[in-house]
Image 1 (cartoon, rainbow, N blue to C red):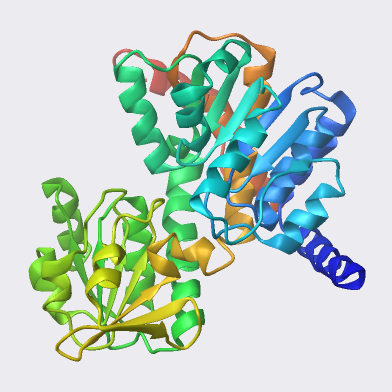
Image 2: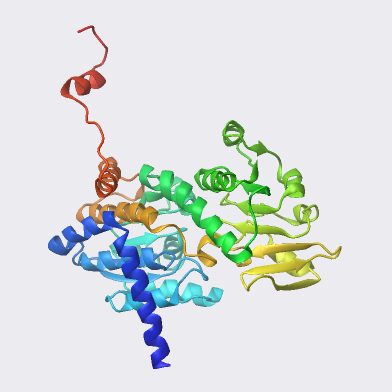
Length: 415
């Protein structure tokens, strides 16, 4: 067992070092954090998908002087080798792959036991537990960050009800997050996971994408790049028009499902694919969820009504045989497919998101804000954008003094 554990840690270290080599934005922040220790005295509780890129953020916060405890924000997304390697950096790790619902909840509370002053959240998992049963911890919290659309939606509801007891920053809504992480990150990593566990051809297939937010845009764009015919389902008429203008067909799910070879949900809502949709799907259709929670595809209905359920190509691709003989394939048990059945977003993408996280936490540690939901500071967004361009040796134009004066003038007058 000792040899197996050391082998696991060894592979985890390799993943960490591989990620570090492709995260120049975090690398620049790290150099300064090691000199200045801006998080000294802070206790950071983290709930994020625990894989190599996330581990790099936790390690960076530790190097910045904080005490850090982390758990995984999905029962199936923790990578055990990464968790083992991260523990060697001094980060307190409470995560493993394959948790029961009870274990998942318990480990979130273990992370909260450090009595955090800062939190890093994904899907508002920590905030919901703080408010739901450990509200006494809120007084010490200087603030936190939330990096998902689903989590920000929850926080907006709390803020609207005046029920958010400390400041939270909606990192998800920053330009350098949703324009890249949500679109390019989700688009690539979702298809990476689907192809890994099906080995099927996308070219020529009909792909139904539910939801045309930034994640749905990315999934649809990558599907079309692979040669698919894309149908988008939406409840928002503005986004539906955008999907049409982008060249996709737009249909209700009841009609789209009847044509689908692949269905990918990206809505953040529940019951997006349900019994009446299963009833019209072609034999062998593949279903994948790219939303945070496992409620978008009604897997519970399938489990209750299928006459047979068995692994398909592997354990992450389960075939449900319906009473009429058709089969429906569900990836990752309807959980977040790119992390429960894949490695998550590409390294360079998460470098941007975690750069925003680190700089925002530094601001929260140094200042004091009233409770509420905040946007990422504009100069932080720009700093990450500038660092990314610098790392890629990309130069851009700068405004001249005359141009700045022109843009700031109330009214234009001839020269």
